[in-house]
Image 1 (tube, rainbow, N blue to C red):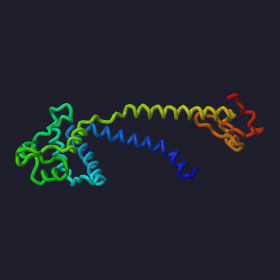
Image 2 (cartoon, one colour; image 1 turned 60 degrees about the vertical axis):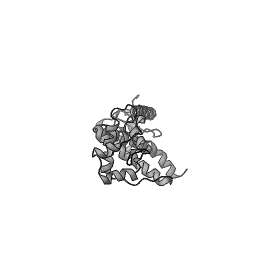
Image 3 (cartoon, rainbow, N blue to C red; image 1 turned 45 degrees about the horizontal axis):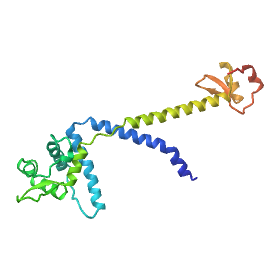
Length: 225
């Protein structure tokens, strides 16, 4: 097995834990925002996915929409969906009045929404009539999606940490069982060290590691532990 693969296997648990911690921190920061800001950030994130998809799928194409117009569209969607419990019920009927007559969007912003694939011309008897596109409806569902639940992630992470601690303790106990502990006086510490003894900072005692033979000068300090 190559060194790179071995290193990856050693680093993988730590990298996964760091990634989860980062996501949780981002989530906690996100839910601290006002609903209006949350809606704006969500719409920006999901619209980036649509832009990436338009590059892959040549059947359709979305032109860029600036962040200010996206934010206004997020506010607009939020108002439109205010009384709708299920975002899938977003109507196909005209939104011309809301878009235009109410002064929500300027001419250039309105054109951005059209070329950006969030609104489209509706097939009605009116000369100028518009409706939400499928992309806009998807974004509407994204705005009202439940935030990710990190409770299960935290529980699994805690369980992994618990198992790691238990394994670590078991390893330490196994190592201590193989050691020969010594009751070395403070004044004789250098003698103990000279003959291969080491200091256990947790037990607060000197010990001889497994495989190290006890010197005659240390036998008087041997203990049962």
